[in-house]
Image (cartoon, rainbow, N blue to C red; front, side, top):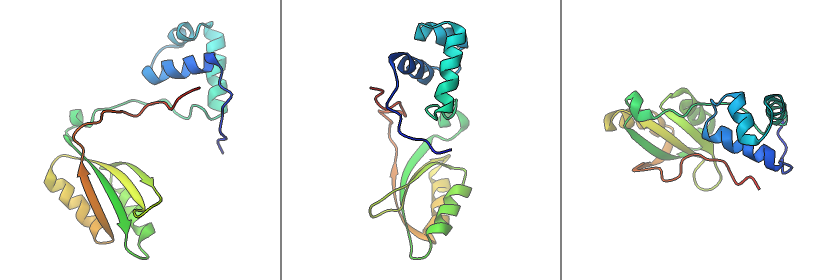
Length: 152
């Protein structure tokens, strides 16, 4: 399904999106209260937001540290000539890469890794380094977590 830009959100849609961004597990009754609607009306609005592609998933935010991954790294990756698709496959098949964007500029990929140790980071990067140049920065903190873009 192709998603088209959608600038026709009204105030009720915005309240629904803000409420779900704060707690995607809230009940329909709680969502209706947050939006100032009845439960059936909130359910219908929610269904329409999904159909329009505004909402694509309901998810959970898990702290990697709680799963034993105390370190995070941002890795910029520049594949060697002819290795773009190979490098992309390596990134896709390595579960410690938890996010990756294909970008313009000097690098082709910007990825986020979670690892248990510096030794594990080295092992993962060694696999990539055979096919690409990398530049790695360790994450100290994330002052802006993933959030909604401005809704107005």
